[in-house]
Image (cartoon, rainbow, N blue to C red; front, side, top):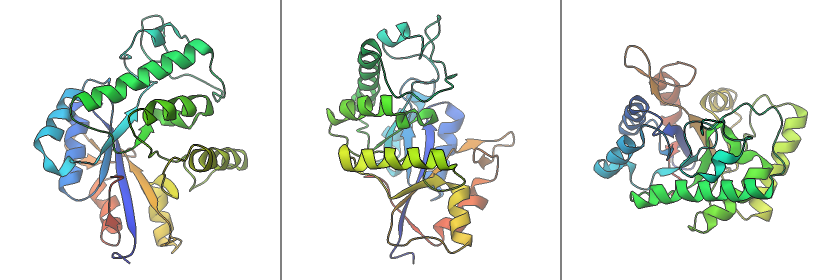
Length: 255
C-alpha cells in the first residue's frame, strides 16, 4: 500500500513559539510530518523563518496558518472591528455563532490583514504551498471567500477542507459538506478528499476503512512537553502516534 497511497501530515502552529518550532522541525527530521503551516504574527515567526532558511527539509513544505484569533494583527484596520479584536488591539476568539456575513468594513479589514500575513511569508522567501487557519476560522463562510480572493492574488489555490471524518453531528456534517463543495466546485480550490486528526486517521487504519483511491490530510500539533518529548495536542508521544502511519503510507506535501 505504501507505493500506492500518499498522505499529507501537517503540523499546525509553526511560529507560535520557539519550543513549538523546535518540535515541528524535529518531526520533519524524524519523518513524522510532511508539511506545516506558519503563523505570521506570533512570537516564534523569526525563529521559524530561520529554520526555513537553514534547513532544506522544510523547502516547499510550508503553508500559511492564517490567524484572526490570537496575538496582535499585522494591520491596523482590523483592530477597529470588535468582532475580531478587543480594545487593546489583540485578536479575540469568543464567538458563539458561525460567521456567515461580514460588514463592508470587516471585509476590507480581513482582506487587508490576510494579504499582510501572506506578504510577510513571501517577503521572507516562503511562498505558501497551501492555506489553513488557526482555530479553523477559514471554514466560516463569511471569511472563506475573502481569504480565497486574497490568496488568489498570490497564485495560491490549495486549501484545507473542513474536517469530514470523525464523530460529527448531522447539522455540522451538512454544513461541512456544503462548505467543502463550495471550495472545490464553486471556488475551484484544490483540496484533499478528506481531512482529520491523527487519532481519527488511526481509527480508520485500525478498522480497515482507508479509501486508497482518495487523498487525505492528517493534522497534528507538535509541541514539547515538560520533559522535552515531542507530543501531539493530546499530550501523547508523537512517535508512538505517527510511526504506525508512516510505516504504511508514503508522505507528501501540498507542493
